[in-house]
Image 1 (cartoon, one colour):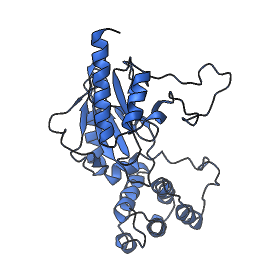
Image 2 (cartoon, rainbow, N blue to C red):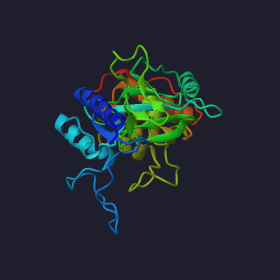
Image 3 (cartoon, rainbow, N blue to C red):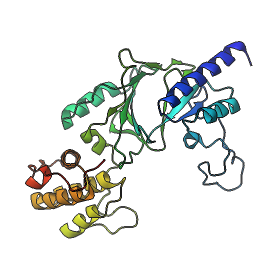
Length: 307
């Protein structure tokens, strides 16, 4: 291996160890920004649904770790690594990456996010920002423990991608053929900021059509079944279920009473009032309905507030 390649690999490892010290799970990446280690199950006749249970490296983001010894072992197995990835959705930070693509002749993700924020009435707080070699940027936000944020590409707006559970962000200091990922000036001292509740609600999967209820369930058709649907929300699906039910409520002939009942149900599950209001507002904007005024129930404190 050439001296320059060894130096690049050593720098990638050093940056990865620094990230791991901050509680960010990391994996080595190749110059193509893909996981550097190939699957140990490649070549097998049938797909193997393994996420690292076999104990061997090569499972992509599922190899991500904060243990320094394990990080060194991963990079030792991939001496050609030129960067590192940071797993999203993992404790303690539960990163949500907002990937803003900016390319000549293509969509402007920065402008698209600004327009989205104005339309839905939220503000992206100052947070860790990584500048990409192509001119885009990655915003690092954090999510609550009970919310699973899915990955998406240009679903919120053209040029705005979301990196959530099962995804990763290219870490600052990583090198690709196009250049190096770098922290934006003035953000190195920041910690990842909490994701605005309205933006968090927008990251939820789009509500299924009436003919396509969530897998394994019959489409809630009555107000009671919608309320029961929200009351039965497990942790990790409370925002998503409320969002789906609220969209159905806004499509009903008389939304306000049903929205009030859904608000009470969401409070019972432990969702805080600001998140509930943001989720209802997002559902209203997607269904092109005017949000209902906040009911007295929406302003009371839940008996079991979210952590």
